[in-house]
Amino acid sequence: MEWPAPLPSDVKWLEAQTEETVMKIAVLGIDLGKNVCSLVGLDENGAVVMRRRARRDLLLEFVGKLPPCTVGMEACCGAHHLGRLFAIASHDVRLISPEYVRPYVKAQKNDDRDAEGIAEAATRPTMRFVEIKTEAQLDMQTLHRSRDRLVGERTALINQLRAVLLERGIVVPQGKRKLEHYLIGLMQEPQGRGLSARMRMLVADMQSQWKELDRRIASFEAEFVSYAKESTDARCLISIPGVGVITATALIAAVGKAEAFKHGRDLAAWLGLVPRQSTTGGKPRLMGISKRGNTYLRKLLIHGARAAMAHVAERDTSLGRWVKGLLARVHPNVAVVALANKLARISWAILRTGQQFDAKGTPLAV
Image 1 (cartoon, rainbow, N blue to C red):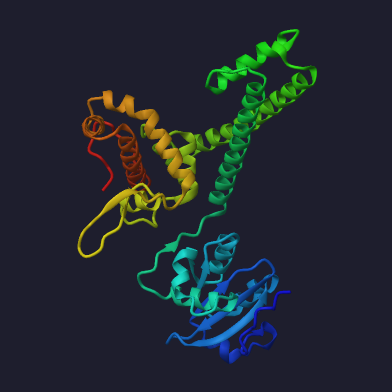
Image 2 (cartoon, one colour):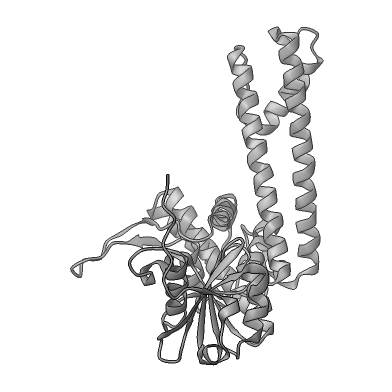
């Protein structure tokens, strides 16, 4: 048996809200929940003047009645949608990464303490906030996540197919297309190279699932291509070597015009493409990349850099000479990550200026 978490004695529901308390609220911290949200209001001096619980369907009505104030929320599922609606009601909406809220949560953790920590974190002048995404950005981001899920399912299916064949003593050369051609020949043979009739039926079923996944993934990719043709920013990003349609659309969905980053190196650091620091006693120590931020974008940039590195190094351009010099003094894998860092910084500059990448010109990133 588990004991229910105790509630603070001053926590009430919205029905008991007084107009005098509402007018004092300068900062409102909201801990979002599926059905019930916790709210904490601070006055201009940072003192708590309100602790309330609100059903999610009444939250928008309550916040809409407040005078213009700062509304802080964690950047979680549904926060961008509510943030756009609160902004329409003239509120200053600030979305905060949950890891930056944690230090402001005092003593025991509960929803009301979380809301208070969010409200306090929203007032910090050095706090980093998450830019509110538009509905179009969220749609594109959802398409990318759906495609990535299908790619993962296809990879798992291919690995299982190889395992089924290996258990029967059939070793297929590495490569997705080699396995695909091998299966076509296997299904055309009368005896199926020693496979039982039941296993041949299973392999044929897995092969049809593979084809269906290929079709669905291709439909997503066609949608990305169509979007890139209509988007000026996407066309500019595609001009960067190593940045294709998928990477360009994913970048736009994640950062928009990259206005949340003051410099290109800030975007690279947000993507986890910079060394992790462990400095103490004035002795700097740099380790491997931090791997923070958007894992999907970092993966796309690194794969793009790996694919473009040989081509870029052969060109007599500023970027090509930089890559060639880098390959001469570091391991190729280190050079790939360094080039991915460079591509992220160039992408930031292109998004901010709206110019296309000029391979022979001066680097845009700062």
